[in-house]
Image (cartoon, rainbow, N blue to C red; front, side):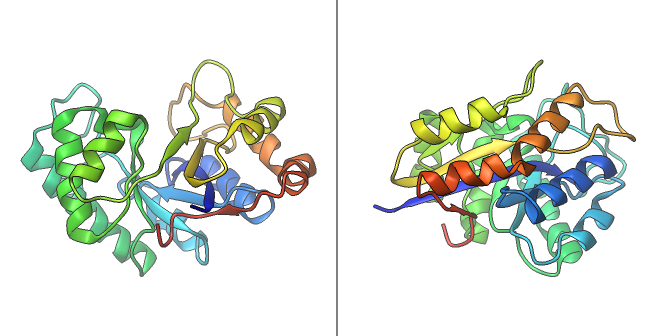
Length: 234
């Protein structure tokens, strides 16, 4: 089994400053993939500027307005029923195609909302229908997706908290520790501090952006004989 190492930036379209940083990290740095939020006020502008890049859908069930029911605000407090998630996922996939003029490379989920069984089950149905791979964040989720006939990654590395996850030190440590076969996804959140939305991960984004724009990040890959890829074809 060969290695496919993916460095995916979540949250394209979340905020104009975040989008600008992600695009820099992809075009000038080492980030190899991103996922687009399609239901924010800035989604359309983000899609226009992401031409030619590897872009998946960042399924958003916890913020902004629903695509399938535009009068409904999505919040983290809502209990998500499986029929609604199926409908909303399909609607966001179609919105992605309208914005990008093509389908997504894969699916992942904002705030990992697919930890909830109803969300994960719904996602499995739609992903199989659209023949799209889905990010798994732990072995149990990985097994559930594969049981549903959905392709997923073999390993997942990344987080977002009070401090920046991807520092230069952690980048080299994780490159050394990562498996050398299978589909391995590094999740990251580079960007500039949000200017339009309230976020607990602002200054941290700028640290991650600096990490991936640094020549040292590319050198770390080269010296280890590693090449970054995307979800396309997984």
